[in-house]
Image (cartoon, rainbow, N blue to C red; front, side, top):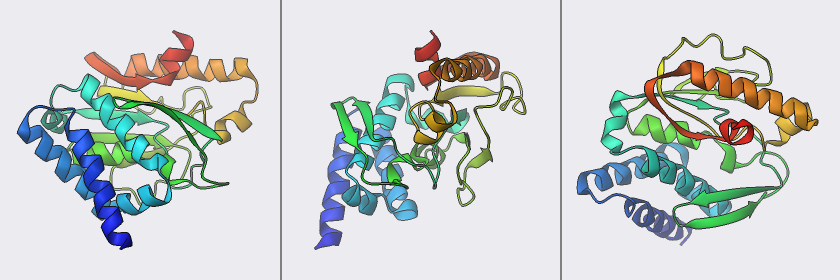
Length: 221
């Protein structure tokens, strides 16, 4: 019975996500991608345990729908995800999610680890064929995409990445994380980090490249 519920939940998610694309080939590609996330990372089971995981996936696919004309084009792109999440990340007490299907606030499921902050966006991009690089302070050792453990609170932490080397960049998980807030309790200190990340995004993006989403940009303008 539990397996049937998991399958139904996954089918409903796929049906919702593919509605963002009209092209049948793009819909099929996204379907296969979500199924791969289930096989490789137990997506449906994690959705059942933490309903917020489903909304996280919807948010990330929604960002792709608003910035990427065709998912099939991702195979030609190199993408950086700053503060990508990890397998040791903690969620804040609540997370505001803005998806194409509506906005909501999801509560933290409990203390400590949460599947909501696993590196789902990098996994999604990798399954779609992109050359993806994820950076985070947490544990990414078992992930198949290219990753680096980086303390993003340090000036120059991303200097090891070459100038103008990414077709697209996103950051979305740093400034609300409990670990970052504990490290930088002062608002002005957090703004300095945001300014540094925004500087790095401008440096790292290729001419004509795109920002998929940037909390740093929203904070510092």
